[in-house]
Image (cartoon, rainbow, N blue to C red; front, side, top):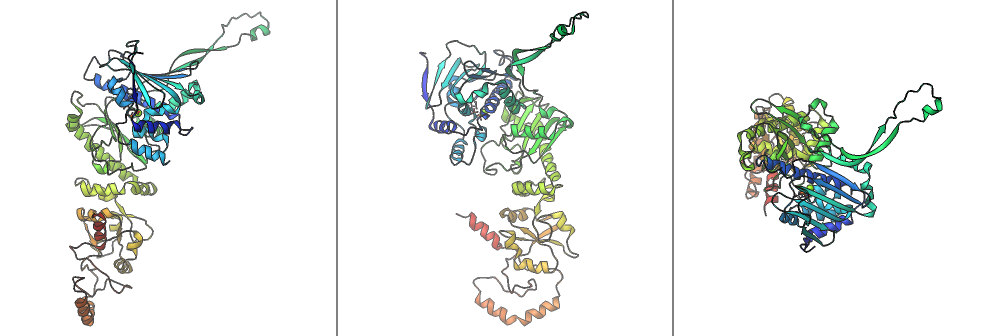
Length: 576
Ligand code: ADP
Ligand code: MG
């Protein structure tokens, strides 16, 4: 062991390991999911390379994952013929944590706000091996380097040594888990089989498990009619156990199947597996595009907004996975879909994209731009479809309603479409929120504008003196109670041929005023007005008699061009 080198784990890794070692019992089976998913990623990488480098696969041409339990030595081995790791990568990948989410994961775990099940989402899935093993040996061979052995007992350090046996793997990675004494169940055929089925259904490479398969051996049938009955009975069928590799998955990608033959549950499970989400999606669409571009895709809407949906700016959203003819190409797109649709998850498999260009040029490629347009269109259709189911749509809006509004603000081309599916609470009884089209259909005769008020909450605006007057006259008022609504009406001044009218602004008229009557009122209160005007000269622009109010004596109104009280509040909250 002369060439063995000892390294200490980065502090964060040690912290993570401590957490893992002391982690709850019930979630520990997820280590297998993490290892299979890493193996699959590694095979994806070498297959991608082989598209441009014909020799990339030659050291180990068969792409697969194998799992083998050695009961005698209590060792579980997971091997793949993926890309493998160079010595440098071994150190970087299995000794330090390069990913940004780790500290968040650590704090969330330490505060008991997250569970171990989420480890894969934070890019530290590998370390879950220490849930079940107290010693782990990783042997790995990358085309660019020699074969190396990484070994750790989950304390503070690990070793890396050049493999004295030379290159035995050809290419790929083999992970040996020396199981803890209380984790020996993971050596059982039955346990392994059911876990692999659960976690590998949607892995695109064959997964083989070394098992003992029972085979029924039919006895030779010797037809001797003159033998007594008792002797015939002895010739029973026998079962024997034959060890061998058993294929665990079918590997036909779900998106390339006929939608008619895919069950809801399959779509849901597929989503949860590729999106690493514990919740089933709220909706999806599976389609095949033809014509200008040909591709197959499944677009999903998650049931919950991902953490920090609007904050991730520089990082890849990784929400769109691109395949070309079933070969995984990349999920590193910056804004494949516009930011406001950043919550969707999609799998795209295109037939005619060039593979000899860099990923950066790929993103600019005309074909990909066409695909992009279609995907955006499909997303909006999918959301529009959701509106048919009130309960689901309310759920959707509570997670992604703000996203839609951002869409209406930013996406000029699709603003009309988005405006049709926006919903707002309103004074209309019996509907929690209404679409603009429904609002328009209820507008009173002679009403030519859509009335709205902005504010901090429905309760607040409901009791506003402006609303009360209108409602008393039988008008419906939209309640725009999200901060973004103020911006929305600036960018989208109307819909369906009707303009918006902020009822808290300017000298807005109902259109049903009796001019003679209001003239009378004005002269009646002229002295009061003059007095108030003189007193409040520094506070307000002007004082007016109005017929807009019913029970409230007075109200403060913004000018047509001025900020409403609500806008002032929003601006004040944003200023620092
Ligand atoms: P993630 O998979 O999210 O990157 P992991 O902790 O699961 O995080 O793995 C860390 C890194 O280790 C991977 O990104 C990869 O570079 C490397 N790695 C892990 N397993 C393998 C493997 N079987 N073959 C090649 N590289 C691997
Ligand atoms: Mg992983």
